Image 1 (spheres, one colour):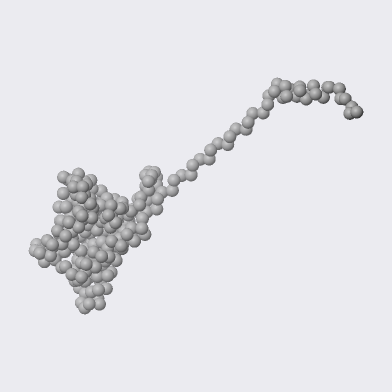
Image 2 (cartoon, one colour; image 1 turned 180 degrees about the vertical axis):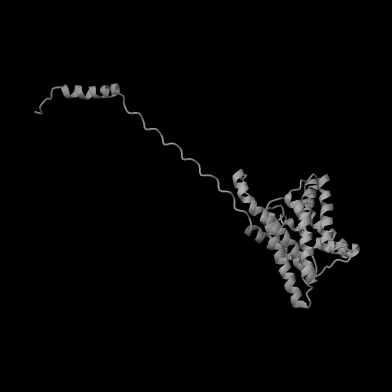
Length: 264
């Protein structure tokens, strides 16, 4: 569900602001614990949010519609299918010359495992009010998770990497490529028996603004550049030498030696 890793394409072609100067090694090391925490908390919440949408029963996001349809056909859990699909999508990076990062590989496994773990303890919602509440909580939690793990900056998930790789290789816009991929998996998932409904539409409309909000909220602070050393004070201008002082004094002495003429 890394496709929501997205959410660089929330505003096409734009990504969370980053520092124009790479952090120094010491600054990078200080930020590593927070980045790792954001990555794994975000991925765990992503899987949990997907489970909320499943239990709400009002429709899933496009990739989970596909995962759910495959799960029903194969008799696997939806989390297991998510892991398998993520691994297969990652193989498509090879011809696209994409380079995975820690976040990419972690995304393949962590989201599906978290999703299955949450489904094991979360019951189905019955009735329109509990279903709407669970759907809303799932969409908001998905936005929180997206902001957390994208701002950790450990690389895109497999599905988003597929999107950006196709964008670079084909020259098509990110929006067009992403729309094409998600419509394809949505149609395939629906034909396989995945749940499409009002939740699918609500997710599509809300996830962009929510992700932008949480991307700003969880952005890592830019490292503070060390203060520049103060410029050395200019050396005082050299005073006149003794010879120069004597030369300047001679005209005054000569003028003093002239006889003074009394005024008439």
